Length: 394
Image 1 (cartoon, rainbow, N blue to C red):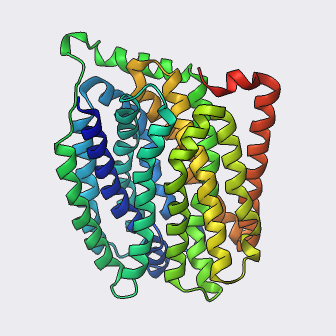
Image 2 (image 1 turned 90 degrees about the horizontal axis):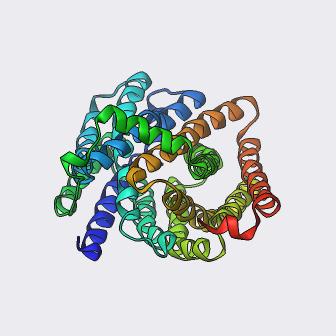
């Protein structure tokens, strides 16, 4: 395996599909759903429903990629990324949009665990830093996607933008087809039923999966509520939709630049402590977001949120990959991805319910308080119960 070449290919493929997919997430999807007549609560469900697919599929996709290799699953995921956007032109009701989002979620259900397992297997030293560099591809997609979608919406209808998304996604086939893949030899594979049972057993008995996945879920509850409702809140406050797209691009831009550094911090001071600090830093901007004044103030909060994410996500993946059985790396990533997706589902739905019963400002403050309190609790628990050495790595 040419590690540098394959790392470049997997990073490029992930960047292409994530950029296109994020174009369809925010600010495009909330606006498209609202144009179809979706209520606030239903809009939150529409934004999050694609992750329900991942909750069910990610562990099994990870297990099957452990068994048969990563590349074929990446080709299947790329096909879903490329084909599904062309179907949005046939959507005319919120209920139809729910259905198409469920199927579209198969793309990320495949890419999530398989790409992370592929990268984690490449390197054993400075693992979090290397994963931080790979996470730059995803952050790059989150930067390019919302900004381009916000700009395109000034000129084209939402349906036309979805067509552009499908065309861009097809480019990812080029790097995926060049990836090296080494599947275990057929004679070394146990019966598939036994492998599934062994993988799920190994994953369920690995505390790092539950810890990292649960903490990621908490972060996604807050950040996905923001993704779903900040566009509508900003529009109600007279903020340009282009500025809203720029908010998410700036947020992910800060994460993109700092994720390798955040991974290095996790490698040096401890993955658990890096995660706890990142959660607190992500939550604080949400506490003050309703008081932000002007475009500059809003974008400054986006920078802080990105800094927090840069600390959290390389460390969570590295923590899992160092403790799961190496035969079940894909399964471990899939199980953690299920917990992560649960947060993505709960966030927009909970946000919509809070808005319906309270308002936008209390919803943002509640999400920020959740993260800040959870980060502090994890930090204190790590110091009291595990000590510095146990919180660093295995």
